[in-house]
Length: 102
Image 1 (cartoon, rainbow, N blue to C red):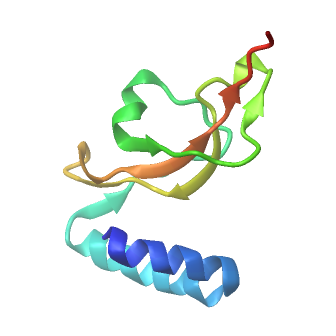
Image 2 (image 1 turned 180 degrees about the vertical axis):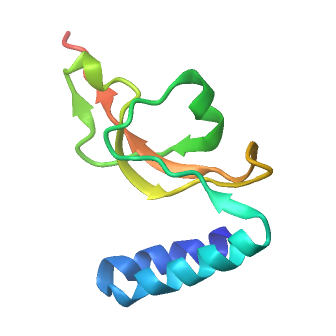
């Protein structure tokens, strides 16, 4: 899945036609019982959410706002699951990082 998703998501940044391609691909996966777990930018992750994701590094992610701990700043791709709880591809997201003064 990742080998297909990554180039499509790169293409979306360049050309909106890729939106249709990702929709077709996700519909195909859905017919096989594989679906994405929708997450939102700004969502504060709960402990039970962390098995779904692989936090990755990003630019300009430091904040002093303690309320942004474990909050999604950007979604690279959603997690893909089967049987509603079995992760077959972790979602890649960028989280805010708390900058400690000192």
